[in-house]
Length: 213
Image (cartoon, rainbow, N blue to C red; front, top):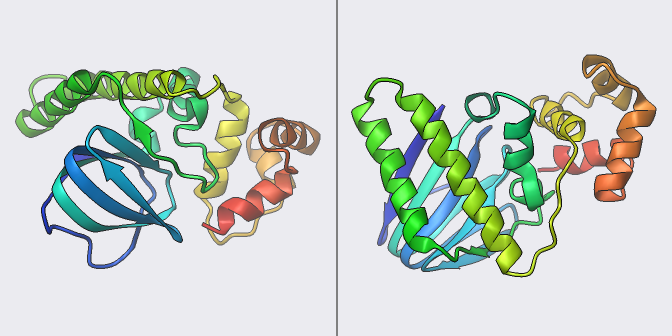
């Protein structure tokens, strides 16, 4: 559902992983190397990268300390606002174009991660509610940092995001656009319209691109 993992010097993944979870890797200090799909990313102190559900990834080198926050869609997304926050500004909606994000208020970011870890460790009354709130604040700070770093504001449509998650939840099924239109109670034309708006691709090409992960 949700957990925090810690990577320290010389603690690595021995083989690639592919999880149906969302992951946020935060370099607390030092430098880390993470391979995501076919690309290797370098995280320096106070930088992070996000990994979308279904992407292959492997921590290949850590010199210092890195923290991984992982959570499932079912845990975090209770309503459309949560879904939009998760993918706002391409934070987890990057179609394999992962990025390194420099966090401006790194003291706040460290504090939120520490509070999240404490709640998960001690499990006080209603701790999952507080953990959800801390993750919200972490994502808000990541989005604010992206804006400060020069990114344009991009807010995806909730229906399009549900379309993406249905694709990721059905790896290897090769369902056509009509299947997703039916289960989402919409039309193929609407999914094509949203896909072209968000990615300049047809809905079918979006399916192909995500199935390739």
